[in-house]
Length: 84
Image (cartoon, rainbow, N blue to C red; front, side, top):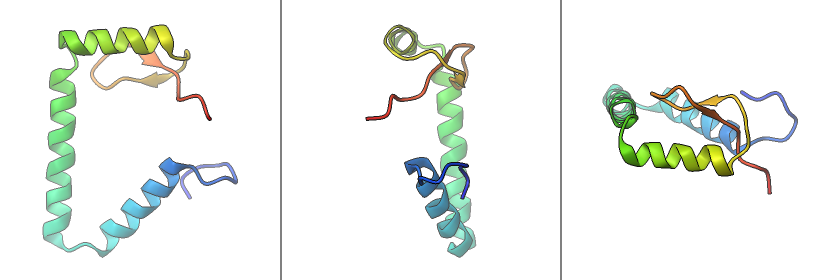
């Protein structure tokens, strides 16, 4: 497991499923997954200074919890989701 707690978080479950899928995928599937992640990262960084993102980040800071989760392409950080 990737996490350190005894309860399995959704993130840990997702990472474990992705790891199992990646290990069993063929070369073409791995290449496509890499291209998708590269595209997502490039778009996130390129869109970081957009005015709409400024508003969304301001809302996240105003209504969210303080924390040290960085926002890709920006200097701000926010807290995690409050558990239900």
